[in-house]
Length: 191
Image (cartoon, rainbow, N blue to C red; front, top):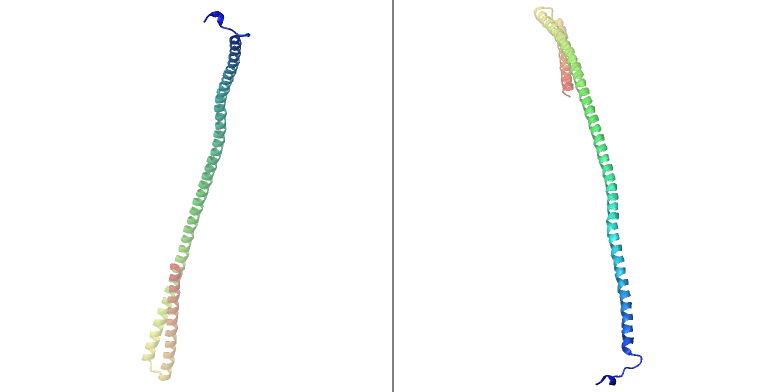
């Protein structure tokens, strides 16, 4: 075909297509550049956020650590105060027990001295009573002897025998009373 045979319409669609293509490419370029600019801004924003978030988190962690340390130091202080109070109470208890034991020792010593004095007094009383009893027994035996040897009659002998028997009964009663007193003292000392 020849060049003359090609007919080109008026307006030429090639020029229009090319112009439209250039316009669409320019529009596409603007869209892509806008998207790239938006992406750059998003990356910058993300970068600033990524650097800012750890700083805020660090600040919050630091605040929690201070709060945590404050509370634990308060608890530690309470434990220390409790230990001080417990030690003071233990010391006071030790002193009180020591004083009570010392008072008990002193009371026991005084009680022993008092009991020893009472026992000595009772022993002296028993010795005197036994001596008096011995004198009375001696007197009684001399009376019995005299009664037997004297020949004063039956009436006189019966009277003296009754008197001697009464005296002997009195002496036995006194001896029994002394033994009872001595047993009571020994039982009291045992308590």
